[in-house]
Length: 132
Image (cartoon, rainbow, N blue to C red):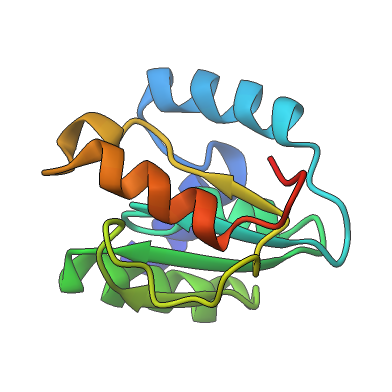
């Protein structure tokens, strides 16, 4: 029953947090994810936003420092049958090559990083020229 309720929450709302629902709706409009784009979700938490982006046909990678969040994100991805890569990692030392991603999202988390300037430099490093 718990899995079914979790599925319904994901499908209908993405999250039960109303503020996040509004943020994500605007973020998805701004992001305009297109099929085939490589998109990085930094501080992805439980992965719901990553999966909403992946539903648009994008190759999405989610990264978060919390192992439990990544475990949950992987389970959600499997349960919803949406391909998405999740891994434990630090935004200040991203494990991706230079210029790898077309777009990057970082929802409501930049202020929590120890060194936000270093994290932004890393995001810029892994973003393709003219990426967003």
